[in-house]
Length: 228
Image: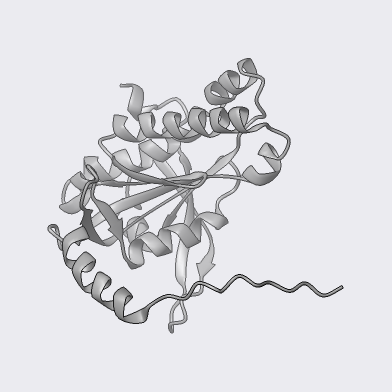
């Protein structure tokens, strides 16, 4: 069977596109903050597609709302700035780590990730009460240069650059309900006695040296820094 369409295809006028881009690039996206070194974090649901496959739209929205709001609350508890949600994940960064001499700020990066993990049961209790499936997630954090961008009409700056990209890529190395960090962050926090760092492999960056990735856990489970 052959289908014939009589409707004309819409085409992009390239001259109009170029003129619009020249205007919008200047007016819509600004770079007031330039770049700065900071810790960044991403928390991402594991297998969200299969978990939500049988949910009607309203229940699916409730599922994501509970997860993203819980992660946002915890991130802000440790002075992180929540940038945005990316589908079933949340992106945030820690402005206090811009000065790498403030060790407490880096401890809070680890505590934030561990606090998210330790809230797994509480979040799933609420999921159960709302007759929603359990949620599992993984977390990654790293330290490096972030580029700061401000979009007109939006209250929150955006972040991007190699550090964000790398943080997103290494999260796949985390076990469900686990936390991993990249080698640059590990270099700063490896002497912290309250945590255990296990080398779990390297991410191939296309350079001579692969990028090491470490899992993070508590060396003493009785110490909950975030509840002090």
